[in-house]
Length: 173
Image (spheres, rainbow, N blue to C red):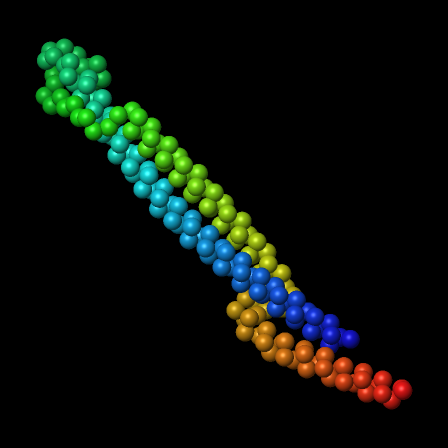
């Protein structure tokens, strides 16, 4: 009976190893997605900053348009204006808002991807701890390496026990 229990334990561990491998792949995929989302977020953040800077430069040009030497600047108060900003037509408030919305969406997508990866990692770690405790191994690689031997050994023991039980049954008949 002990041999059958051992075989059942080895089969359970085998099933859990397959689950661990699947979860490990899922975690890796989610990490890759998270990295992709992070790159997109950085891109959208940079784009937003560029559009915002262009918009602010345009606003400075609009303010500078009305500067008169000797009159104070409405921004800094200086009465000397050696290099007033030029008006640029590069971006509007709508452009800034559109870029901000795209950046916010990218941030939400990134945050969701990170949360999914963290959840998958926690599940993976929990399953790994269960497997290591069941097997008395120090790490998953060791467990995976030993598993075929354990499986073969426990099957052999179970077969021997079954053969013994069959022999006893024959003798009793």
